[in-house]
Length: 280
Image 1 (cartoon, rainbow, N blue to C red):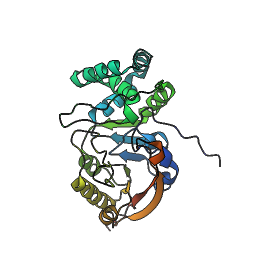
Image 2 (image 1 turned 90 degrees about the horizontal axis):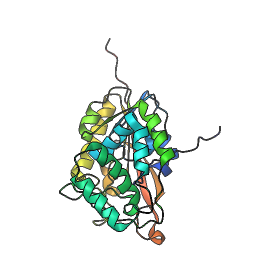
Image 3 (image 1 turned 90 degrees about the vertical axis):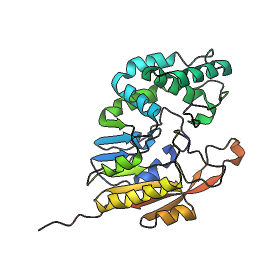
Image 4 (image 1 turned 45 degrees about the horizontal axis):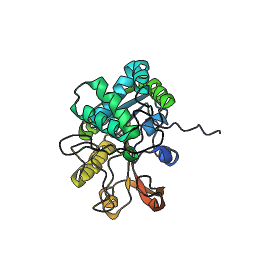
């Protein structure tokens, strides 16, 4: 069988799953519906083939951008293209656009600037301070790539998706028997200085990690298959003790120095849907 070429997300994203599509897909059960409470850049959505998708993220800027692409991608792409030029690829311009983004309450403007900041900011990070202000520094790239083909592909496939900006708890609790859930939460930090969980101002702490595992167990009891990805640590194995654990080595992509981007152990915690007993 010829392997289908993988599709890249149009956003740069720390922790994106583009390079893990093949091993991850082996653990995603067949279903009509795939639910992603932490959709991020959407690599799993883009590289799977379900009839329908329920894609959620707590980051309102991310979901606002996705909803715009679904409904008016031609206008959006045309306007976004103007933000990718030598004149806009300067530190002063970047800082002006970042300030404009943080002060704006217009959804369309924020979506355009969110894409610009993602492609021109440092390392593709998406980070907010405690006041909810985007604070990623300028990336100093020679020529930031305008992902037109990726934007078009996303917009076309988005016709099969519903987008929401809710807490992960609500999304999982609303799932129905037979659905499949894939969770890619902010990872358990490997050290006190290695956490990149501020993709939204609310953050994601260890209590959230444990609650997510509990919700996965409850969903499993309701006949829903759940897969969670995370760092493979003693603590994460403890909270996922009711799941089948699959471990793998994954290359780092977020370290500042390329020479220090080694491999780290990650895991997939797989909760197979339990059959619902028939009532005679």
